[in-house]
Length: 417
Image (tube, rainbow, N blue to C red; front, side, top):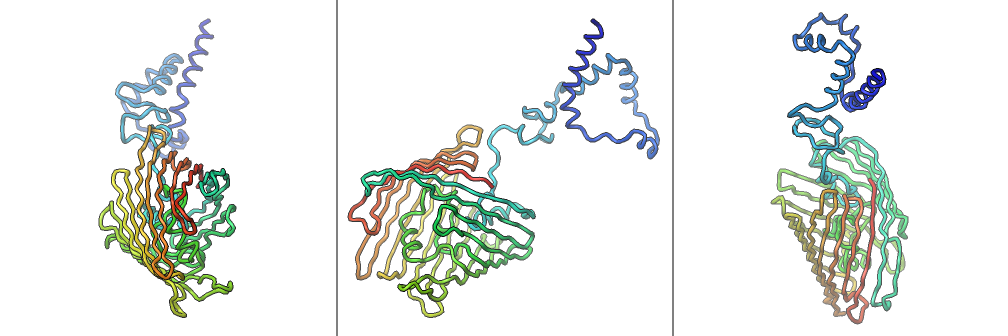
């Protein structure tokens, strides 16, 4: 019975001592230490050695090492929070939501967000694979609320980062134009001067430069659709662009470049377009900017647009506004866009809710007098920056509509990086 109890006690000591052994530093060879260093005996160590000579004392010592003493935090690796702030604690042991990865959005998708990630520290040399999927269901009054289900986006890509060079290639398997981004970016050591070459977003319209993942809307809205998709002002294009960024001067950022021209009436390729954008951040919560897009800058500009935007972010509440005006094939135009959303964390597991509301207006002022407008409201549920569910209702008078119509939509999205 004594041998059986001794074995049981030894098993308990081993099990309780595993966390302490796992968190301990590697033990060096005692013989090597004796050979290289003179023997020194500490009085406290000597006392401990003299009192732990028997098996029962060894058992008590192992248990004492495994269990925290009075005033001490849990052992390393425990799921409980350590009392001492300076003690090393694994990420899994810290309750509450994890810090958001500021570099989550890729350079091609959201260049401004990538700049914020660079400000946090020097980028590491790495290669990463990323992707996302948007699945959407809609019911549109224009089609008598006939339900439509589809994959709006199925993006996959690879990004490589070096000290002065970054490259990115991405494709959208759910799009007619499969290739989305394919470019390289060369920068100096201070990241003040940059040169882009390849296919990427032209620097026009603040909402176009926003990441589709971060944008609380399911689309980019009536104005962006009409200017970029219908009239070929901006968007992703082949081009060459230079960029100057001065963090000490209110975060000033100036981007300008030449891009592949659009297609003419007969499908011919037109001469190169030009685009530029200037933005500053005078306060941490305020960003203001201006952008322009010019078609056929070499042969003489035919259509153009200029825009001014501002964004205010305070306590999870974000408010953005943008106005634009210019010349389209149908004549002069003006547009106004505003969007407000509030991100509210829920619980301690990375959940958040995000109510949003937005409004847009578009006026054609040439030979054809026309107006368009849209009012959008929705509610989003977010999880740890990797999943979101969006419910949205839009009542809009879009180009080609005879009267305003209501569209209801639900979108589920997830991504990896």
